[in-house]
Amino acid sequence: MLYDRLKSRRSIRKFQNKEVEKEKMDVILKSALLSPSSRSIRPWQFIAVTDTELIRQLSLCKDHGSQFLAGAPFAIIVIADQESSDVWIEDASIAAAIIQLTAQDLDLGSCWIQIRERFHSKQVTAEEYIREVLGIPEQYSVECMIAVGYPGEEKKPYEEDLLPYQKLHFNKFQV
Image (cartoon, rainbow, N blue to C red; front, side):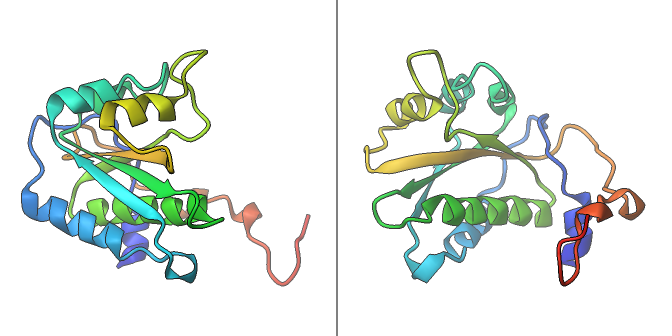
């Protein structure tokens, strides 16, 4: 059941030294292509990276929060054509979430690495850095990278009684 997968899905930042099978990568990438988008414009595109040196280079895109990518055997860079849709950010984010849920369903771990609006250095954005490393044309914006692999760490599932129920409202916003 999807609900059970949602409770057990956690951000995994440590991965086993084990390749992700091509069949599993294919399922994840096909699932990304099935992602819904506003008016079916599908502004997103995906760059699948398995080359360990490229993954290492990509892990250096930010000072904080991206280094763990170097230990992942598989990375997916989620980009979108910003000129084709005014809601490319939302569409790319939905696709990234579907990538993570599909990885979870295949007993793989994953973690979102935010790129849009983040910096590599004071002069260079994380997006510019990644665009240079991967040869991404200017019309595409980089929303995020998803690290994927077999989990090298265990995290407890979320507990229902600890969910932030105060964030649920019915019929009207309630203070």
